[in-house]
View 1: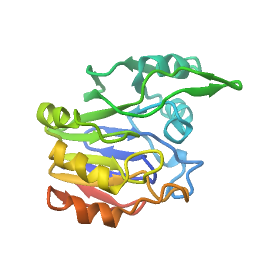
View 2 (view 1 turned 120 degrees about the vertical axis):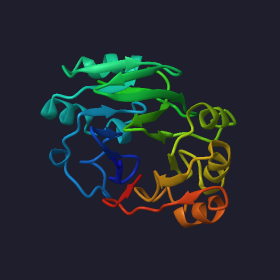
View 3 (view 1 turned 45 degrees about the vertical axis):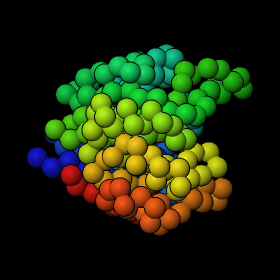
View 4 (view 1 turned 90 degrees about the vertical axis):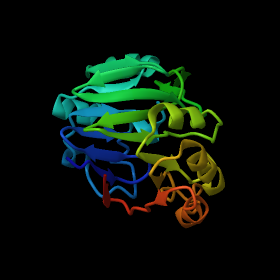
Length: 227
C-alpha cells in the first residue's frame, strides 16, 4: 500500500495510508492553505509544539472527528482541558495510536503558549517520526539544525523528511541541506516557508544544495507525494 503525503501549507501535512494522520493543522489562519478545517477528516492529529501556527485548528478538528491529539505531555494537559482526547508523550518515546507509531524527537525551538494573556510553559518543541504501513516519515517541526539529527537518521531511517527551510524562526536552506546530509532520507520535502513575508527561505535554493544527498520534492500547497 502506498502512503500519500499532502502539503497543506506552512508545516501542515495530511498523511494518508490505512489511517489518516494530520500534522500541525494550521489551516483557517493560514493564507496558503488550500482546504478548510471541515475538509480534513483524520484518524489522529499530531502537534509538534504549542505555537499557534502549529496547534492551529487541532481542537476544532479533533472535536469534529472524535480523534486524539498526540503531543508532548505539558501541551497535552493544556489541550485536554478543552475537552478533547489527548495522548501526551515525551521526547525519545514511541506511542502507537490507532495503529500509527509516533516517535517523538528533539527540536531546537521555543514552545511556550499564551493562555488568557499569560505566557505558560507547554513543554519542549519536538518532531515526530511517523510510522505507517511500513513507511517512516520524519516531520522535524520548527527547528534549527542540530548534529543529533544524525542519530534520528541512524535509529529510524526515515524514508521522507519534512524540513523547515523558511529561515528567521527555523532553519534556512543552507542549514536544512545540512540536516539532509545528517539524516540521509530517501526524499526531502521543504516546508515552513512563504506563509508570511519574514519566512522567505527559498525551496529552490534548498533543492540545489540538498539534491546531492537525496531526492528533493518541492510541493505547492494541496499537492501530494506518494511513497
